[in-house]
Image: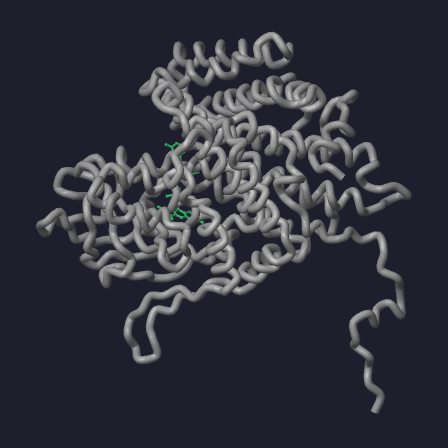
Length: 538
Ligand SMILES: Cc1cc2nc3c(=O)[nH]c(=O)nc-3n(C[C@H](O)[C@H](O)[C@H](O)COP(=O)(O)OP(=O)(O)OC[C@H]3O[C@@H](n4cnc5c(N)ncnc54)[C@H](O)[C@@H]3O)c2cc1C
């Protein structure tokens, strides 16, 4: 009987494979990222370059890419019972997930500034997060929460003494991971609506009864959570090994599919108070502010991935007799993507620096984190879809990794204050923390006199904010004002630090009214070649 030859290469009998891009990996994600390199030097983090380069090498390896692909394919499974019917509530994770998380923990991504709190440590950690986040956004969720939990935990020195050494240990087997469980079925943004109760049972221990509707990474060792205690909503720490902690099911999510996010119930779960009873929001907000920084960094990482992959593809694919990278309209699209990516990168590193600084910086930190979290996270999905389209049909296919980039891209905007909530938070901060806005504007003003578009934008934003307060019509304008503030800081950072080709194009298109609504609408005269040479050195 005749057999059909299915050996690899059989297709070559019918056609030659050509004009397909080669894989971008292996490449060093730090070496390829000039704006990141400059930002590290500028933001007091030059001492961390070797660490970031090392993570850049790992993150850009074929091995890391394959692990990221594999754990996306082999999604986590919840095992509620063992073979004998005992309740176990374990999550079965692909070995590739463990490879990625172990790599992040061993490289001190969750712990560096707490282990070595010198100037620039939050910037170096932010850069590690940004670089490794380009491999797999999902795995950075427990990494971020473990980093962010420390300032809240320090509100309770006995618990900090017990848990901080393990949470900051760069050892995947012996260290510990922390999560955060606030969101309930009836309300996520408005955590004051939480119905979970906490009953004191003596010795600072409480028994919690209720549920949480979203609880990412239930395998974490400890969680901070909120519950209604006698004196009001309070913050608690519990250990996931407590028999009162039950995982109901895993969410079937749009993206970050390798990351288990769950629904959980508390059945008399034993927990200990963190901070003062009745001041749960004030305590957990310390954690939330640090995870918001990571949402900003994560979305900057997403934009960097999209830019690098789109540009790489365009440099290897020809259409109509020319490389895509040489087609003028494609140059406009790619340069436009590169501008937002660079703006996001430098902003993330600047905001990260404010986490290294003491009192005067804290007003800027709180305000800038909320403003830029809103804007950079909001921009990421549009950026991802345009980067995907640069790869044509290949971009729509899973192996290109662009579908994963696109699926994952909206999450940071939902998490830790969805768009509206983040924007309203900025308005609230203008009233309740009156130092924030002036500190933010002062930083934007450092670029005054160098770019006419930016100067005019700064004047108009200040005027608009003054008018807003007078009119009392603040809420409907929250997104508009926050977007304009975010662009003011990004423009200011680029004018002061980036080459003129980048800064001028950014200011013309984003604040000067010369750009359009879709990517690829930069005005005539923009030096796209200079922007693209910088975005991904050949
Ligand atoms: C993948 C994933 C993982 C998550 N992991 C966790 C986790 O580990 N722990 C945890 O606690 N939570 C987690 N969450 C939950 C997340 O933080 C919440 O979904 C988010 O805070 C929004 O809350 P909500 O879903 O209840 O929406 P709602 O609060 O109902 O908000 C719905 C919409 O209304 C808007 N809105 C709310 N209030 C106002 C207002 N006053 N004015 C105008 N608009 C408003 C919001 O911006 C949003 O667009 C996760 C979510 C996702 C998607």
